[in-house]
Length: 114
Image (cartoon, rainbow, N blue to C red; front, side, top):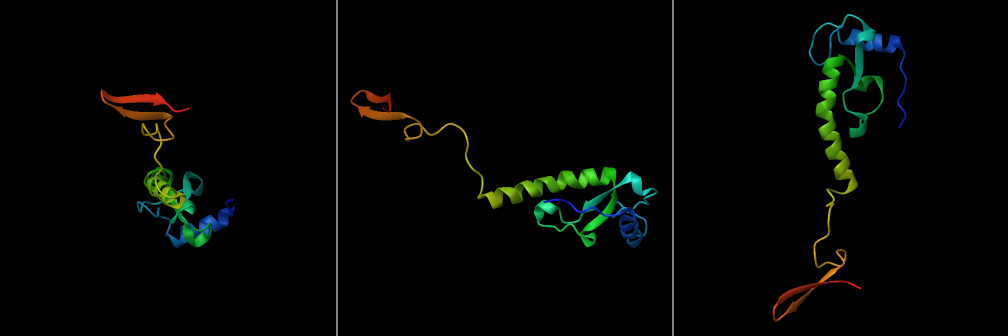
């Protein structure tokens, strides 16, 4: 999905709605070039790329929020994908392993499947 581009005046109006403060920490934002825009609901979590879903935040606040959001986004992607898939070696004795176990009088005997 391609992100929309908003003008600096759109960002300035969003900042005016926030009273010139960071939406996360509440401290004043001095310059619009020294801050980031943040999606309140991340795009990967179903949020929209609209002005009402965007907040202006400090760069360090944005990094911290993104770090927290990344865990939630990863979980959403796992759920959408169909759960957690097991990876690694197959269980011995299954068709996928290529080995067959024979029970003999002396114990088990493993042979490669043909």
